[in-house]
Amino acid sequence: MNECEEKNHKVIFFFISYKTHNIKDIDAGITQPVVRLLKMINERGHTIGLHPGYNTYNNKKNLKSSY
Figure 1 (cartoon, rainbow, N blue to C red):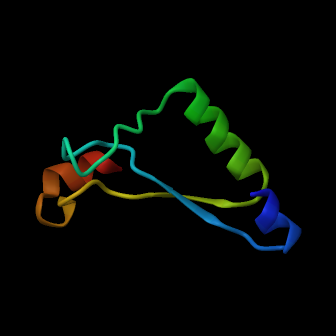
Figure 2 (figure 1 turned 120 degrees about the vertical axis):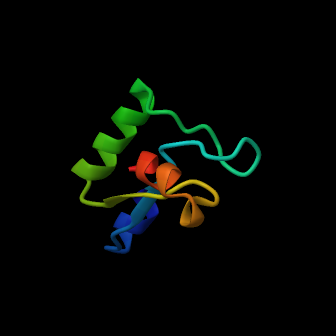
Figure 3 (figure 1 turned 30 degrees about the vertical axis):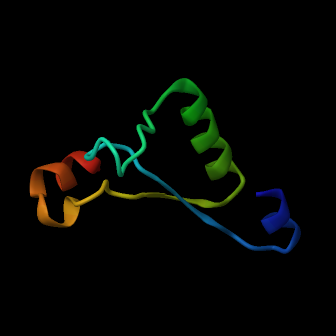
């Protein structure tokens, strides 16, 4: 964030919030450190996006769970 802010760039940070595949997705989990990071990103004026898990494009249940 520091480097982007020095150049007056705003960034979109995408997080996978729901693991849909044991190998292709990471288990991000919304832990307290992640919550603090999300708050910091927001406070610094950047955007937070949610990235649905692997293969959610063809699985409505997993896609809905990702949000």
